[in-house]
Amino acid sequence: MRVKSNNADSVSVRNYGLDFLKIVATIFIVFHHYQQCMDIVYPTGVNFNGPFWFYWGWLVELFFMISGYVTYRYVPVVADGKISLKDWYVKRAARLLPLIAVSVFVYEAILFIHVPVCGGCVSCNGKTVSLWGSLITCLGIQSGGVFANPMINNPTWYVSGLLIMYTVFYISTVVSRKLRVPLLYTYIFIVLLGCGLITYNINLPFLNVETGRGYSCFFMGLLLAMYVKNYGVSIRLSLLCLAVTVIYLYLCVFHCGPMGSEQQFLLTFVLYPALVLLTESGIAKKLFSHGIWQKWGQFSYNTYIWHTPMLLALNHLGYYWDLKPYLPYRWTMIAFCIAAEIVGIISHYGIEKPLDRLIKRMVKTNNGNLCHADKA
Image 1 (cartoon, rainbow, N blue to C red):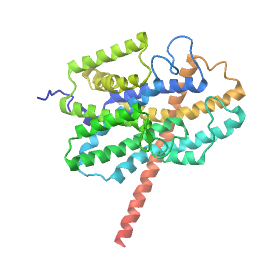
Image 2 (cartoon, helix red, strand yellow; image 1 turned 180 degrees about the vertical axis):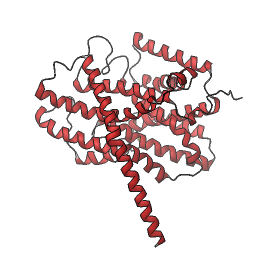
Image 3 (spheres, rainbow, N blue to C red; image 1 turned 135 degrees about the vertical axis):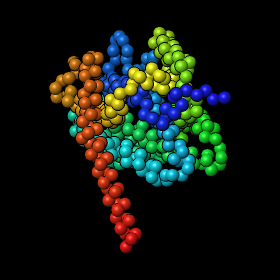
Image 4 (tube, rainbow, N blue to C red; image 1 turned 90 degrees about the vertical axis):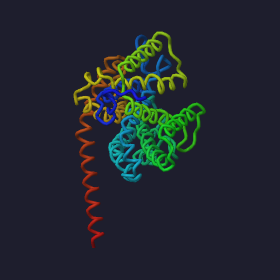
């Protein structure tokens, strides 16, 4: 028996609560990399890097889950063969990779002038300019696939993994439809496959820890969206998710939760699903009803891409202006995050959108030329 609610079709409309989750997660990841790249540990309070009660790098799992959740709306389009695999992949790559390419060249330029000056530092971590690494990073094939991650603007590995997830989603959905296997079973199998890759530390092309993180969380997001589509989110479920979130955070803060793969799986199957489902509650819909969350969420992708080149640039400037006395403060970390958000806004309007318009014009012109050639 299905339990209907007014949220049953919510995966078909914009969920601004998910944008809010992405915004918060991006801010915390910026904090995480700031402490990591500057080699800073605060003596008191919350630290965002190091062997503490929570590993903030696992917020990427939340990004994967949100991406899977919003991708579910395309299941009918893919399953019914209304879009080809090539068109499906190209559209997503064209949306994600141009900004990656620009950031990679900027990162490599800064690295080129920084390494001879610093002689090696925490932010460099032995990295040098790599033409091969730049190429495969710009193409989004640097991590999780057949090539090892060259650590060119390190956060971009997530985009590489996401493109793999989109491809696997398309293929698994089409195959399931042809074999008449319920999508529920197919997606559960891929989630468990991802868990196995992480648990046993497998390192094969497309079957490794990086893709395992994506498989388990991206397809978990699809399963959550499937549930919400069929049953909605009742008040009772919302209260349960809120209770799970509060209890989990309490245990982490006051009882030092596990730091191994146990916590990684608890995030995948407990905390992050609770947070995603909470965004579908009536209260969350009212709290995050303004379109500003969507716009800020778009800025956050740019912030995520640019914050590591900015950290490298900050480290380089520190050799000329002696910034070290100012860096180990939380207010400096917060100021850097605000600067990264501003850069994200500038990048969105000054780089991402113009590149998107340029690519669309090129595709339109190319299609027009092909049609003209066919007529000839």
